[in-house]
Image 1 (spheres, rainbow, N blue to C red):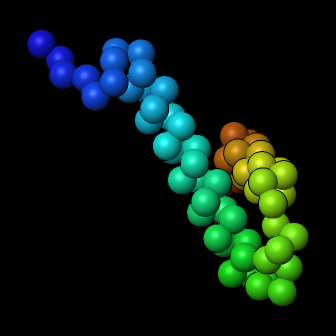
Image 2 (cartoon, rainbow, N blue to C red):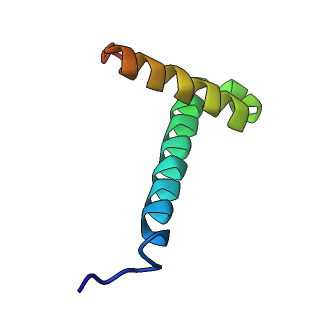
Length: 66
């Protein structure tokens, strides 16, 4: 019998949410390290756009410089 943290449906949703949050945090941290003078301008919109570009490049097979 499988043991679930939340539920059979809740565990995958929780894992996906945590993965997305970790990716957003990492992308934002990377951007702040690249341009510390613009740290206050880097918001979630910027992170989402950059994440979409990275995902599109990965989908197209361009794995260099992600």
